Image (cartoon, rainbow, N blue to C red):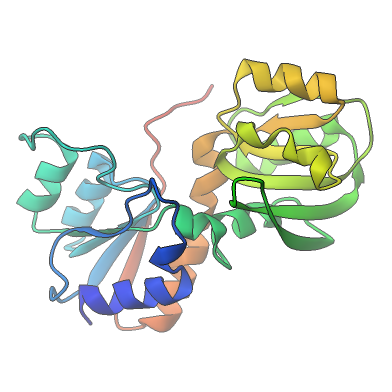
Length: 248
């Protein structure tokens, strides 16, 4: 199998055309004709992910976050892109298209809520979110459950009301605070929430949970591995869950 075969499969599952306009997805470094025997799947193309690929004789790294996002002014020794090229690796990145796709990041995050039902709702800016119906709970209980399953640190604003429906947006979704009431939800589960968003949640009388950017997105890595392993049984897929951010 070649890099292009894996890219085509991922594009079918999570169409590149569904990525946000600002995004940079697809094959970002490498060669479509490169033969792939082993591949690493990780949230980010970090130096640790590259080390894992090199130690395991991999030819490809598949990431969620784009290995190239902002314009590069140089590619110097020790930088991520330099090390990718130096080690003759290819990198495929599936970002916002993986967020919203079936079986993608948001769907994976919903599973941690043990939902009774899940539906896709479209925010005012056109972005696809998930609305989860769950067994009635409190903000404190939901925060404890999320910490136990996702790990990391859970920050939240408690509206002191029963939570039955949760709006879900992996990664940075604090800006969707006003969508909570619009979709008839009691809470928003996301990450990278600003202080003013917590204040706004209190004013609106809704609950807001920040479960961490890495923790709300790394959960897609294993499902993605299972999906790729089922399709490409002759390729060995290795996962890397190393985060550069440490929690105490």
